[in-house]
Length: 584
View (cartoon, rainbow, N blue to C red):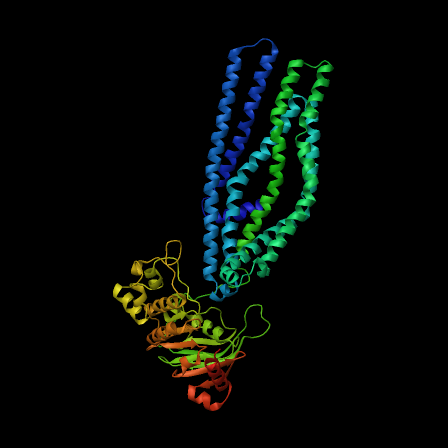
């Protein structure tokens, strides 16, 4: 437990006193909560003594009320401080996780489920909040108050104390059989199953349009269905294994009066003080539920403590196994904007073979090169190595003679613009989407890039123009081609000297493809450009074409040169024209 508290302390960042003060107040609240029972016992004893002094009764009643109010005040103050500590830890955990994610190479996110990342950050941060704000303060009271009660039941009458102890020990023994090693194993499997369901559920929701179009059911999404069945079987099996012991625990907990009352009757029968025994028995009936209630809280503490530790582990392990990119403090600035690959080899983390092998080419400043070739050949990998989605295993990638690894992040991002295959727009205004990543932008600049990206016609038809909300409940939804053109407008506005285009027209219809091609022409004018293309007709007039196959440069040259060679490119060109000519 101390290890968990030390790890939480690391996330409090200078406000470490909040939690200790909260725990002290919680302990004080637990002690004060017992005093009203003591004063009630005095009242009952006084009333049963035969010589009732009402001034004493009123005094005891006022003390009972005062200590009860004091307990509530301490509990309220403890809760306020524990919540402040919990919110601070939760916020700092989220912030640290986001900083860690931002430091990772962009390629890390290619193999990650958005649902899983969201769940790991949101739900595990919330788990720590629950533990610090609620479980931990209650724990102090749940341990201190039962200890005091345990002492009191033997101080007042040890015989009644022994009668209370029998069902409590039986309950503890039952709980002990439930807190075995397999419980931790189940907790780990349970949390892992929840994580899988969350990730698969996100993917399923994204695929609902496909499900509806093809009239399928959840069974068609086998991974999601299997995750649900796995969760059901896991929880059902664990519940069945505990049901008998849980019922026994509940039976023992509620059996206290059946042990107390006969014991009290025996004490009175053998000459015990009638009034004292009755008042002691009533006191025990009042305070022993504190003992029995604490049993379940202490049992839940094991789960909560384990979950809190696991939550921190999962947050911190989210980015483990992937080294963050290092950027130099003193950067080298390129004076030119040519792009060069020199003997570059690359292997994805965990892969057994190189994805790229000995790739070398040079794009002079202001020229455009195209990457073509069979799927899986390594075209996208080449493009994504330039802005450092990953770092190369061997060789160098340089801009203007400067290795990209020797450039500061801001400088590298200033040099390179990347147009993704799947255009991603944020749920904010259209204007914010366009100016994202650009500074000192004027309205004239925005309208200029809208015109160059062939966006002006549909933007003018939007209800609020550039202030139109994209997506969300009250926003508008753009077509794929319109989204791609907005993304190109964003790249145009950034005006970086090097442009990387990852199949920008892959999913466009003929009309949008023509408009996107016009936008691409404007985008690449005067730039050093590297583009991936599937439609070979779009690259006939490109300066130079690299044919990538199985991680190597199989051929290179202009369109006419490659056709004359009669190799892989010529074969692709012929197959492409066959596909275009095919009709139903």
